[in-house]
Amino acid sequence: MSAKKLWSRDELLLAFRLYCRTPFGKLHQRNPEIISLARLINRTPSAVAMKACNFASLDPVQRARKITALKNASRADRALWKEFRDDPESLAAETERVFALWCGEDAETEEEGWQIPEGPTEIEQIVRARRVQRFFRASVLASYEFRCALSGISIVELLNASHIVPWSADIRRRADPTNGICLNVLYDRAFDRGFITFDEAFHVVISPCLHMTIPNSMHKALLLDIEGRKLDFPSRFSPDQDALVYHRQHIFRSKA
Image (tube, rainbow, N blue to C red):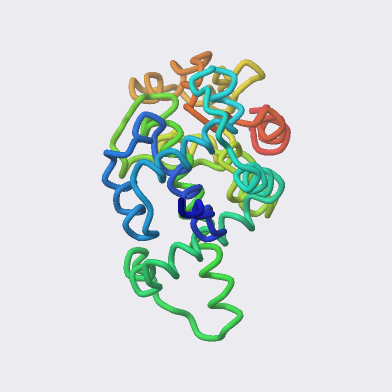
């Protein structure tokens, strides 16, 4: 009997990346993206799907909902999950770097449509930032099943992965999906500018600033009337309460 082929770190990173950017209901061997990754790393689709589900079994949201009862997560799976929770920015950057190496750097830059800057330091910083941004957006949108958590809009081009603690405020949380909420472009801007926030029970709180002018019908329907609405929870990576406390204290416009 041939020895079981161990998963390399690159393979684990690629499987973890796929888990983070794939809606929970699509973690099966018939998913074209799982089939594609299986071909890339010379594994079977069932093996890749199982590895992704192993990561799901480590996700606190899935364990709380008892959606998955898998107990096959290896020591390496658990170590990678802990590494991500301890330093998501670094692991996200490494994960996207590995994906780029396996699939080709040229494909990565073409996908993003950006110009290579001059100077090695600047290139390294911008490439890392792009990779972290891409990981964060894909992870957050997939966690919310590609729907706005407040309006339910599912047009991907109108959705943003909103940072709760801003990108510039905490490097370690830049890639952390629990520091993100999927919002449409209007609510993303309102959240980013402090016009809306969420309370401890994840209900919308409206800034007094929005009441300063006489609202027209759209202002009322799109902004004032969402006060008290509860956020639709994601299938994984629920919004972190400490991050929301930061948002209420430092971003939200609590006074008119």
